[in-house]
Image (cartoon, rainbow, N blue to C red; front, side, top):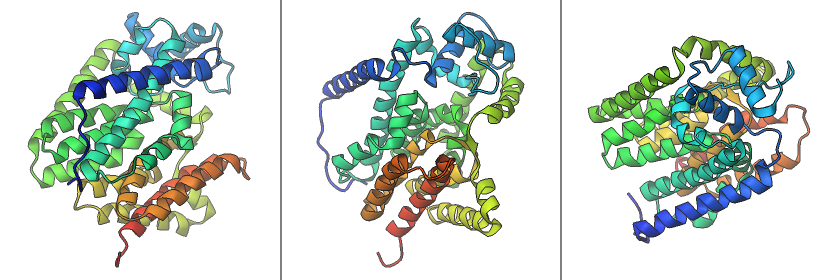
Length: 371
């Protein structure tokens, strides 16, 4: 429960502030990051949505990728480079339909970047409202402008959507608005590697507490999204799975157990045991499960580059609230230091594995016996 009353602002004022933040961020992003840029990760998502809106029921084939490259750049991308195909489940095309209606890819991308910041702020607000109003606004701002969220915004990635889905679903679940909580969680299917383990936390608690309305909401929206995606893109699952193997061939993907095993098998087993042990330790509460489940999921499933580390802001806020303030600020500083100090050619892999481990360590220290 909140530890102190919060300042209540009129809903209309909140909506107006959110609209101003969205448009101001989009305006800045367009002029500083997008206009004239050769590539942002949102570009192929937009091209895929435009494709299905034009009636093309194919998102993943080599021919579809080739057509989207020509649509975006006027020529195909040479082999061996990131082909910028539509690598996500086709449900993402359903969620991004409004952006596909915008004929200019740069404007659509800037608006998505502005919305991403708004979604990140919404995730922070949902957590703060559900956990503790004493989380300082300065900390929220510092985490919002951490290097990983900034990288996510800059590239036009979709990680902020997963953040607001998890935090929003948790806030609704704790208020016993179960059907709506399940419906919101279903939207996270577009990024399965980030949401899989945290979603199991919801399922565990829903079954244990017999919260069947949550399961119905989750199932109904999941099925609805899937059926709409099939109506738009055809039977896309086999092509998507084939595309994933091709994607791993040219994109930067890291799987923590394999990286750690190459260093020493005991290190891989120890980190996995620590991660899953932290999940088990937090099993009695939703925020406990989510706090550990987010970084643990990053260690269990393969991840791409560093924008997914944006989700670590949520467990770091939980660690801060439980008393791990020094650890949280040290991790924040280390994140920035890693941006400027890159001693290894694959330094990004060290961050992709190390940051989730450090976040789990902050959670453990915050709840250490005797504190």
